[in-house]
Image 1 (cartoon, rainbow, N blue to C red):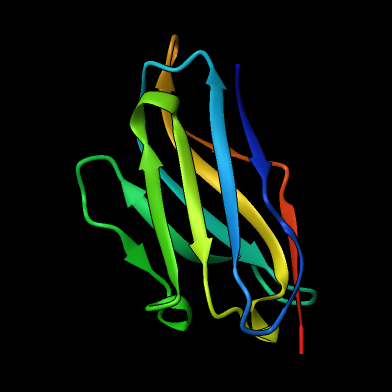
Image 2: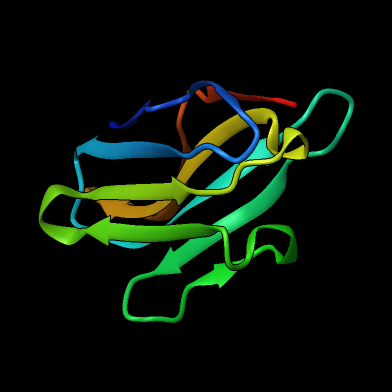
Length: 120
């Protein structure tokens, strides 16, 4: 059993910053990738940023230059530093991790989501 615990969402004004955190715990042998997705009301869930282990990070065009994803491998934790936030960044942000453990290989796992609201 693997769990992802997210934190760091909230209400900010346009131009301000937030930092999201997501820690994976449980039966973990390896983590293939960790990333962040978001879903705004009435819209589909979309990729924000992903950090493959040993690979190149990838960002949605809408957040390039403003958001930075980073990982602490020792803590099985991924962060999303969000700067210059815009009202259109308002969404529920979900942590995602692709994890291998006892009896399972590369299992996609989701966090519960954290609300980010940016007021104009």
